[in-house]
Length: 186
Ligand SMILES: [Fe+2]
Ligand SMILES: [Fe+2]
Image 1 (cartoon, rainbow, N blue to C red):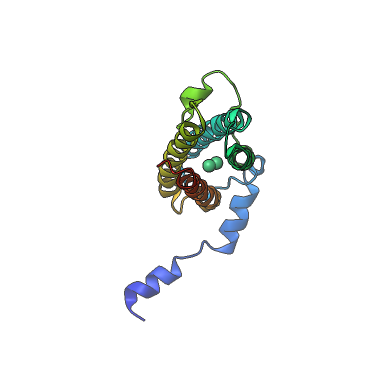
Image 2: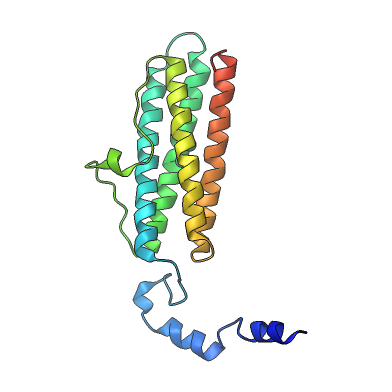
């Protein structure tokens, strides 16, 4: 083993005594330990922005679900509803993580649209609604990707949660493109 490798291996883990001592200090911080190396305030801020984004997406998909009319409307409306429910699930996951990190989830309707990355656009007709949803998904995809990169190895739990959400937003975008294709409108 090269000398440098040996040194790295040796300093890999904190010794047990220190680990135990650190865990006993500030137990009121719960899951947030001394080893938490991310900037907690920033993580909480971006998670609250993501929460606002998800709530806006729930509202938009709900509006679209109830407003979908005309030929092909039934299957499209069902897809809108499924997406609305999945965005609600994301909002719940994010809110729970915010609390776990010692923060407070911001559910205030005041400034909600400003905090969110995606927009609430009602859309005019089925195709227009699908296109607006697709735009919103694409915004979410890019912002989640950035958040994931930001968390890196400093907050692997938040990162993994965001990776799961990102994968579903990508599925949503794919679903919407398929709907546009079925309607011959892309
Ligand atoms: Fe979502
Ligand atoms: Fe989505």
